[in-house]
Amino acid sequence: MNNFIKTIGGKIFMKFPFSLNIYKYLSKSYYRIKVKNKQKIFCIGLNKTGTTSVKEALEELGYIVGNETEAKKLLNDWLKRDFRPIIKYCKFAQAFQDSPFSFPYTYIILNHVFPNSKFILTIRDDAEEWYRSITRFHSKLWGRDGKIPTKEDLKSAIN
Image 1 (cartoon, one colour):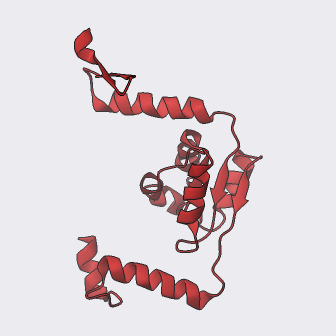
Image 2 (image 1 turned 90 degrees about the vertical axis):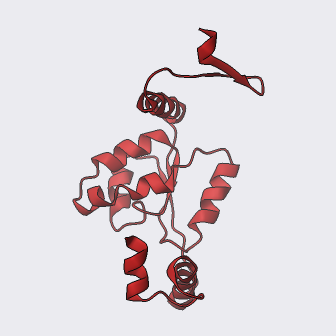
């Protein structure tokens, strides 16, 4: 049995002799229990309006914040207006930001399912400031030499 127990920094960890999926399930169950019956907070501003700063502040305050990369995988469900996977995802954390939570009308469903939720709307001072921020961001990711990415740049980035 000692082959399955490991201590790191005084904490005890189990090495699971079975699939990683079960480990992920157990981890999710832990967070589901930890956030059960706790108020939800949704940052519903568009990307590049300070949502990451809000996320960091919430984490510093001790909230369990949903994983943005995992949440983005819910786009197809949102497009089909199937909110069940989004609602299920919300059971594993207390706070959420960016997509799909910033998408139109999502807050209505979330407010209905989680009636005591708080919603934080982040905005830029004006549309030009937001545009400059998002183009700077995308230029760093996909543009050449810091320039706004072309259609070809974006096509090659996706493939």
